[in-house]
Amino acid sequence: MSSNGFTTCLWFDGNAEAAADYYLSVFKDGKRGRTGRYTEAGPGPAGEVMIVEFEINGQKFVGLNGGPQFPFTEAISFQIHCADEAEADYYYDALTRDGGEESACGWVKDRFGVSWQVVPPGAVDLVIDPDPARAARATAAMAKMKKLDVAEMRRAADAA
Image (cartoon, rainbow, N blue to C red; front, side):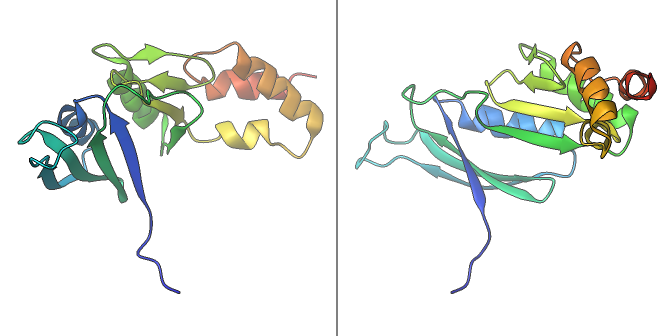
């Protein structure tokens, strides 16, 4: 049995094309793929965008204009593992701009309702430290944050 990999399908309420354009503006290495439109067969209005394919950070996505039945929730999110603090700041700011929202522990929701976890380098190492006491202190510090501050998490982990 062979596989051609995975494509993540994101269900939008009529704004899949705008979302794809937005993600391609945020993630600089992205590219747009095909756009498919509804036909007379439906279920959407003939000529309206049904799907739009795009790729960001090597991950394939398809935006589907499916309607209002299934809105996004925080139950699914995408982690962005950043190379440095500057990259983490860029994604955090870009994804919360123009109607996005901050959440807790580095999570944000973009203006389309998709949840992202902006992960600066070292953050995961601190909360899964082999020393349970260090991990607990780092996690407690993280729980008080919106945007992750790894230096503060490290200070908390190192405090005895």
